[in-house]
Image 1 (cartoon, rainbow, N blue to C red):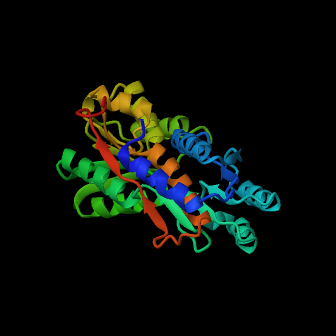
Image 2 (tube, helix red, strand yellow; image 1 turned 90 degrees about the vertical axis):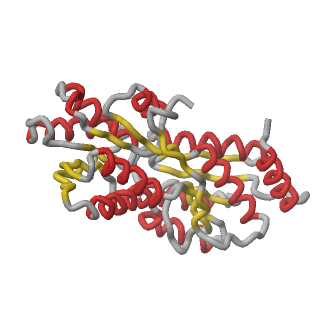
Image 3 (cartoon, rainbow, N blue to C red; image 1 turned 45 degrees about the vertical axis):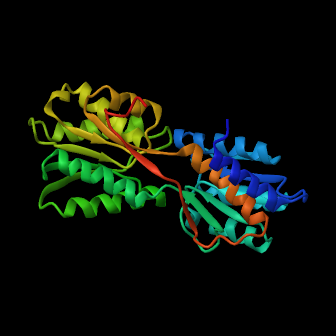
Amino acid sequence: MIRTGQAIASAAIFALMGSAAFAQTVAVITPYLAQPGTQFYVEAFNARAAELGWDVSVVDTAGDVGAVISRIEDAVIQNVDAIVINVDPVQVGAGLAAAADAGIPVVGMDAGNDPLLAANVTSNGYAMAAETAVYVADRINGAGNVVMITFDPFPPVQVRGVVADAVFQNFPDINVIDRITPDVSDGGIADSRAKMEAILTANPAPGSIAAVWAAWDQPALGALQAIEAAGRENEGIVITGIDANPQAREAVAAGGNFEATVAQDFAGIGRTAADTVARLLAGEQILTQNVYVPTVLITAANAAE
């Protein structure tokens, strides 16, 4: 059953569309389809697009960011009505320019800001990072060594690290002893585990690591695996992530080291991205480039909900 708010939004969009048969073809392009979050975005986008009667093609470049440019150019040649990307727009500027020249709107789906994007539908990365970093600071009583796992090549994730840094810098007794930038070709779990194992080996004393702050769930899960494999799960090392994917929720619900994550509304982002495309193609002006979808802090108290 569609909630009342959703029904009203749907009615408004169909009213904007009128009887015109536009937005029939939309290309969704990403190098990150191996990531669970991206999979959820795309599934929800496709479901909403089906309701709107669109023909959607999904292109995954399997970690190759540069190839996204060529795929955008292909979509332009195919004269699609709109393009949706899940990638750093700064890194695919040539493709965005080609779309702009052709008059094809491009919407980011948890992408980043760029003048050539009509809009970017995302969660508020500033708020999510602040919430989990403050959780860490509170749990370790404002003192201890923290490991950070970040990923600067992707703006929505990069900004989370910047905000967490700012939070930790407000606590003079918190020391960030190491930073991990994992290989994300497999989602980030395996490489994060390997790198965390090395950090644990370099810091063998109980209590030498107070917490692991991760910018998303896969590396947090990798850190958890490393801590458990090293037999150090009883040291009270606090782990936080962001995304609340099913595996992370299960780990948080178990009540172990992985204590908190933030639930992004992936389905909401996908649906809202589709609705944003519909609004643009109906001639509506999007007044703010970022369209934010609400998030929720997940701990053992609500992980099973």
